[in-house]
Image 1 (cartoon, one colour):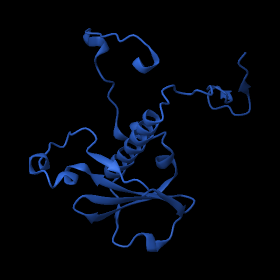
Image 2: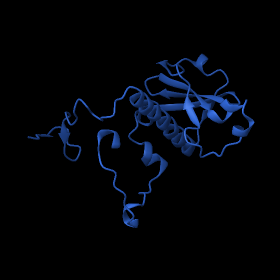
Image 3: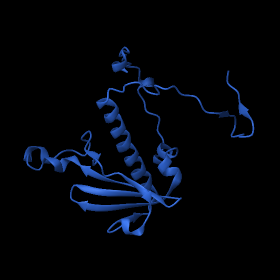
Length: 169
Protein backbone atom coordinates (compact mmCIF):
# COMPACT_ATOMS: atom_id res chain seq x y z
CA UNK A 1 0.00 0.00 0.00
CA UNK A 2 2.88 2.36 0.75
CA UNK A 3 4.24 1.70 -2.77
CA UNK A 4 0.94 3.06 -4.06
CA UNK A 5 1.42 6.21 -1.99
CA UNK A 6 -1.00 5.32 0.79
CA UNK A 7 -0.46 6.65 4.29
CA UNK A 8 0.65 4.22 6.98
CA UNK A 9 -1.70 4.15 9.96
CA UNK A 10 -1.11 2.23 13.17
CA UNK A 11 -3.81 1.00 15.53
CA UNK A 12 -3.24 0.03 19.12
CA UNK A 13 -6.81 -0.82 20.13
CA UNK A 14 -6.93 -4.53 21.03
CA UNK A 15 -10.24 -5.11 19.22
CA UNK A 16 -8.51 -4.27 15.91
CA UNK A 17 -5.41 -6.38 16.59
CA UNK A 18 -6.95 -9.83 16.94
CA UNK A 19 -6.98 -12.49 14.26
CA UNK A 20 -10.16 -14.29 13.36
CA UNK A 21 -9.55 -17.95 14.11
CA UNK A 22 -10.46 -20.63 11.61
CA UNK A 23 -9.49 -24.18 10.76
CA UNK A 24 -6.85 -25.20 8.25
CA UNK A 25 -9.64 -26.53 6.02
CA UNK A 26 -11.47 -23.18 6.09
CA UNK A 27 -8.18 -21.54 5.10
CA UNK A 28 -7.94 -23.58 1.89
CA UNK A 29 -11.50 -24.55 0.97
CA UNK A 30 -11.68 -22.07 -1.93
CA UNK A 31 -8.29 -23.01 -3.37
CA UNK A 32 -8.31 -24.70 -6.81
CA UNK A 33 -6.00 -27.43 -5.55
CA UNK A 34 -8.28 -28.35 -2.67
CA UNK A 35 -11.50 -28.24 -4.69
CA UNK A 36 -10.09 -30.54 -7.41
CA UNK A 37 -7.77 -32.71 -5.34
CA UNK A 38 -7.75 -36.49 -5.62
CA UNK A 39 -4.40 -37.44 -4.01
CA UNK A 40 -1.26 -35.87 -2.53
CA UNK A 41 2.24 -37.33 -2.65
CA UNK A 42 5.54 -36.23 -1.09
CA UNK A 43 8.94 -37.46 -2.19
CA UNK A 44 12.05 -36.67 -0.20
CA UNK A 45 14.76 -35.86 -2.74
CA UNK A 46 17.61 -35.14 -0.29
CA UNK A 47 18.19 -33.38 3.04
CA UNK A 48 17.20 -29.98 1.65
CA UNK A 49 14.66 -30.76 -1.03
CA UNK A 50 11.29 -32.50 -1.40
CA UNK A 51 8.83 -32.89 -4.25
CA UNK A 52 5.12 -32.24 -3.72
CA UNK A 53 2.75 -33.81 -6.23
CA UNK A 54 -0.98 -33.07 -6.35
CA UNK A 55 -3.18 -35.35 -8.46
CA UNK A 56 -6.47 -33.82 -9.52
CA UNK A 57 -9.85 -35.47 -10.10
CA UNK A 58 -9.45 -35.19 -13.89
CA UNK A 59 -6.17 -37.20 -13.68
CA UNK A 60 -3.97 -34.19 -14.29
CA UNK A 61 -1.24 -33.24 -11.83
CA UNK A 62 0.86 -30.39 -10.54
CA UNK A 63 4.21 -30.83 -8.85
CA UNK A 64 7.09 -28.71 -7.60
CA UNK A 65 10.38 -29.12 -5.81
CA UNK A 66 10.45 -27.37 -2.44
CA UNK A 67 13.78 -26.35 -0.90
CA UNK A 68 14.70 -25.50 2.67
CA UNK A 69 16.93 -22.41 2.63
CA UNK A 70 18.57 -23.37 5.92
CA UNK A 71 20.64 -25.90 3.97
CA UNK A 72 21.64 -23.40 1.28
CA UNK A 73 24.09 -21.84 3.73
CA UNK A 74 26.14 -24.96 4.51
CA UNK A 75 29.37 -23.15 3.70
CA UNK A 76 28.52 -20.61 6.43
CA UNK A 77 28.29 -22.64 9.66
CA UNK A 78 27.03 -19.63 11.63
CA UNK A 79 23.90 -19.55 9.45
CA UNK A 80 23.28 -23.30 9.48
CA UNK A 81 21.12 -23.47 12.61
CA UNK A 82 18.08 -21.26 12.20
CA UNK A 83 14.68 -21.29 13.92
CA UNK A 84 11.75 -22.84 12.06
CA UNK A 85 10.06 -19.43 11.90
CA UNK A 86 12.76 -17.98 9.60
CA UNK A 87 10.97 -15.83 7.04
CA UNK A 88 11.16 -17.29 3.56
CA UNK A 89 12.81 -20.46 4.82
CA UNK A 90 11.03 -22.64 2.24
CA UNK A 91 10.72 -21.84 -1.45
CA UNK A 92 9.80 -23.41 -4.78
CA UNK A 93 12.85 -24.23 -6.91
CA UNK A 94 12.85 -22.20 -10.13
CA UNK A 95 11.79 -24.19 -13.20
CA UNK A 96 10.64 -27.16 -11.08
CA UNK A 97 6.87 -26.67 -11.39
CA UNK A 98 5.32 -29.27 -13.69
CA UNK A 99 1.76 -29.75 -14.86
CA UNK A 100 0.30 -32.38 -17.13
CA UNK A 101 -1.47 -35.72 -17.31
CA UNK A 102 -0.75 -37.91 -14.30
CA UNK A 103 1.34 -41.05 -14.82
CA UNK A 104 2.39 -43.50 -12.12
CA UNK A 105 6.06 -43.19 -13.16
CA UNK A 106 5.97 -39.65 -11.69
CA UNK A 107 5.80 -41.15 -8.22
CA UNK A 108 9.18 -42.97 -8.05
CA UNK A 109 9.83 -42.95 -4.26
CA UNK A 110 6.88 -40.76 -3.29
CA UNK A 111 4.61 -41.52 -0.36
CA UNK A 112 0.89 -40.81 -0.45
CA UNK A 113 -0.39 -38.51 2.26
CA UNK A 114 -3.73 -39.76 3.53
CA UNK A 115 -4.18 -38.02 6.89
CA UNK A 116 -6.73 -35.25 6.41
CA UNK A 117 -4.98 -32.59 8.53
CA UNK A 118 -1.67 -33.24 6.76
CA UNK A 119 -3.36 -32.78 3.39
CA UNK A 120 -4.86 -29.48 4.56
CA UNK A 121 -1.44 -28.33 5.78
CA UNK A 122 0.32 -29.30 2.55
CA UNK A 123 -2.24 -27.54 0.36
CA UNK A 124 -1.97 -24.42 2.52
CA UNK A 125 1.84 -24.61 2.52
CA UNK A 126 2.02 -24.96 -1.27
CA UNK A 127 -0.54 -22.19 -1.74
CA UNK A 128 1.52 -19.84 0.43
CA UNK A 129 4.69 -20.68 -1.50
CA UNK A 130 3.05 -20.07 -4.88
CA UNK A 131 1.58 -16.79 -3.61
CA UNK A 132 5.03 -15.75 -2.39
CA UNK A 133 6.49 -16.53 -5.84
CA UNK A 134 3.78 -14.43 -7.47
CA UNK A 135 4.41 -11.58 -5.01
CA UNK A 136 8.17 -11.65 -5.64
CA UNK A 137 7.62 -11.70 -9.41
CA UNK A 138 5.26 -8.71 -9.15
CA UNK A 139 7.76 -6.87 -6.96
CA UNK A 140 10.61 -7.60 -9.37
CA UNK A 141 8.52 -6.38 -12.33
CA UNK A 142 7.29 -3.30 -10.43
CA UNK A 143 3.66 -4.44 -10.57
CA UNK A 144 2.25 -2.96 -7.38
CA UNK A 145 -1.42 -2.46 -8.22
CA UNK A 146 -3.88 -5.31 -7.70
CA UNK A 147 -6.54 -5.98 -10.36
CA UNK A 148 -5.13 -3.32 -12.70
CA UNK A 149 -7.51 -4.40 -15.45
CA UNK A 150 -10.49 -4.09 -13.11
CA UNK A 151 -12.61 -6.59 -11.23
CA UNK A 152 -16.23 -7.49 -10.66
CA UNK A 153 -16.93 -8.55 -14.23
CA UNK A 154 -18.60 -11.80 -13.18
CA UNK A 155 -22.24 -12.68 -12.74
CA UNK A 156 -23.74 -12.34 -9.26
CA UNK A 157 -26.31 -14.79 -7.88
CA UNK A 158 -28.23 -14.73 -4.63
CA UNK A 159 -28.39 -17.82 -2.41
CA UNK A 160 -26.84 -20.08 -5.06
CA UNK A 161 -29.84 -19.57 -7.36
CA UNK A 162 -27.99 -19.88 -10.69
CA UNK A 163 -31.21 -19.48 -12.68
CA UNK A 164 -31.78 -15.85 -11.61
CA UNK A 165 -28.71 -13.62 -11.85
CA UNK A 166 -28.71 -10.27 -10.07
CA UNK A 167 -28.23 -7.32 -12.41
CA UNK A 168 -25.90 -4.70 -10.96
CA UNK A 169 -26.10 -1.21 -12.41
